Length: 455
Ligand code: PLP
Image (cartoon, rainbow, N blue to C red; front, side, top):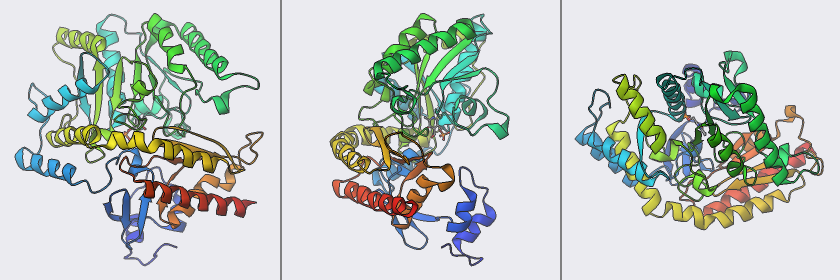
């Protein structure tokens, strides 16, 4: 029950804050969790309650909530040079070093980096880059963007239009020219009797049809998360990227990997595209890029797009786009430290080491009669609740099953996320075996309790 006293943190939060992505009736009933600090993978609220955050904040706090080295890197840079932009041929030394580092750790032999404050802005920026390029190369009709149903690319007008989730209606979005293809989720989208290989081939054929229907010369790019995150942790069907990339290449359509969640280790390799064995034309990065310690996004262009965009900008003097805090020196210093921490202080190694335990825990919970499927990669996974396992029939949405499971978990000190009928887990990379066991034990208790309640 929320503390309803007028001066409680809960009441003050509700009185003065306009909430986004929050189920308001549920929050009125349960109260806002107001946080004061974190300890490793735990967060602590104003009542002193500790929660194991099995969502790493929003997939981003991969080094936990009290990493001294990251805080020290921020403090050192604040003391040295606390803020600057990257306009007019001026930028901080940290920005230069981060660009070099990002190209070095990217799958590209050469490339260039552009900075934003968020993943949404990075997707918008790359769409604008592709439109700018189309204009500069004399093909201004090359503007359409292909994405997939269930994808999540952000909330700004362009990235929300890319997003294939049902958030857009009241905003009058998507903008014209955004085409959403079938979600590559074999378990849900596969037809009776269709093998996974046939399913992948069907999606490749659909892409061919869409390109033929829309006209290849009207399509600017195809944006895809290697593993869909906010769609409910959906890894691609087997061979998906190998099937679609040659088609895109043949039609001269760039493939963009939106690595905002997958990037920097979540799937067990630095990039999700490495995990799935393809090299895109550009990468969108954010979240773990700074381990969540600074708002930052980056567009990492592979050599072909980098060269063409550079030439296009040179031809008209400049690329007229940028944010005040693009390439912020403190953000860049933190990102450099975060990359070092992830790659050289054992975080990526821990993702790999903990993955079998994670998979075993998911498998154990998936044996429950009301869990239809577990899916995931590395340290990201989802359990999908079903009313009937054999027919995959979902529970009626008014039962709010996944929300009830997540709320029960919160009551017992575990944060996990309800997404559709799924419960999503993506713990920080620092998780120990004991903490992982705590996560699964608490989730199992919540599943048992909620499924017993709804019969
Ligand atoms: N792209 C993906 C794959 C994401 O998961 C997100 C956010 O969750 C975004 C883009 C948007 O990033 P931001 O919330 O930083 O704007």
